[in-house]
Length: 210
Image (cartoon, rainbow, N blue to C red; front, side):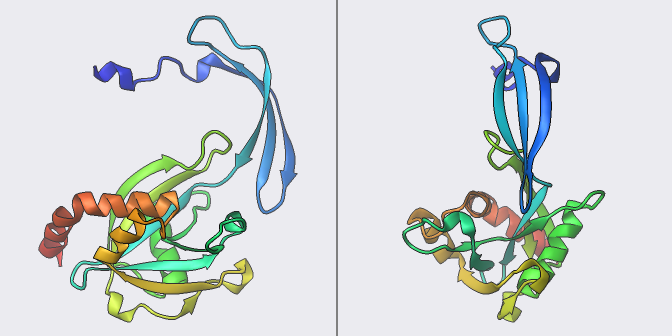
């Protein structure tokens, strides 16, 4: 049964016939002509795909186990411009990993920059690909222990056009916001649902290491 979790094909079954940059601005887009092995046998005909090329990202769910509160960030997102409710999204603090950087250290740095507080302990949640049908962005998720009583204000870097409002949310409201759609982005939903699954275990871990 477990063998079904292993892919039948690998990189050797994909042939990239050409690759060239189409755009390099806020995002980079490459054009690829490729073909790959088919499940029914043989290879596909050559076909064209556009690939959004992004560095690795991190997201951090900042959580206070004593007060049972999460610290989230609210900011404008251009991808939400057609969202009926609002283009201001409630989400995790997050950022990009530069070459040779440790994602855990990036998680700490982004927490300082976007919320004004730094987690005293960080636990890895998971890695996942954000939208592999069109892009190569890989996300590393963490949960960081913080004191939410000190979380407040507006944060972010001016040179990156960041204007981030810190929002402190009680645990029960956090879960409810996922269920009713007020929190509607994958990174934040994944982290909150992980917290639901590991809530008691996390409290015991942090109680031992406090």
